[in-house]
Length: 118
Length: 116
Image (cartoon, rainbow over all chains, first blue to last red; front, side, top):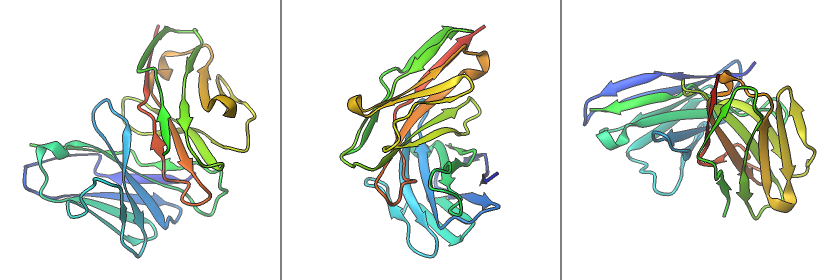
C-alpha cells in the first residue's frame, strides 16, 4: 500500500545549526504534502502545505524564513529548520495522499522526526 | 472556524472493557471529512477511518466502531473488548470543503491506557 517515508527519524543538533527533514512518498506521487508539528503530549498543528513546483503555503504564525519547505519533485518534500533553537525541539511529521486513489483513500503520515536542539 | 474537541484527556480501562472516545467538531461547511488516527508510543500516526459529512452510517471494523451524529456534531469512537495493544493516543480530525480536503485540524487527543 501507499507509504510515506520520513528521514531522519531522530536528530540532535546544536543551537544555531540547520536541520533538513525529508518526506518521501513511496510508490505514489503527491503534488501536495503537509507538514505538522507536535509538542510533547500535545496535538498536531499544521505548519504548512507543500506544493510541488511552487511556494509552500504557511499557516498563520509559522515563520517562513525559519521553516523552509521545498517540494522539488512529486515524491519529495523537505523541511529545513534554519538556525535552530531549543524551542524548535519538537516532533515533525509529514503527510501525503495517493492522488490516484479515491477521495476516501486514507491520508498517509510519515513516521515523524524527533528534533532535539541543544 | 473549524475546531475539534476531545474532552477526554486520558482514559484508563482494564482489558476487555469497552471504551468510547468522544469527539465533537465545529464547522460552517456542509461538506467536510472526519478522521480518527491512532498514535502509539513509537510516534507514527495510524489511519483508522475517514468519513464524509454526507454519510452518517455508523461503521464497524472488528472491535472498532464509529458513531457519527450530525445533529450533535459528534463522531465518537468505541473500542469493544479493549486490549493492551490498544494503548495509544487517539486523535480525531476534521477537514473541510471540496478542495484541499487533506488539510487536517486535529483535536487534542485522548490518551488511552489499557491495563492487563
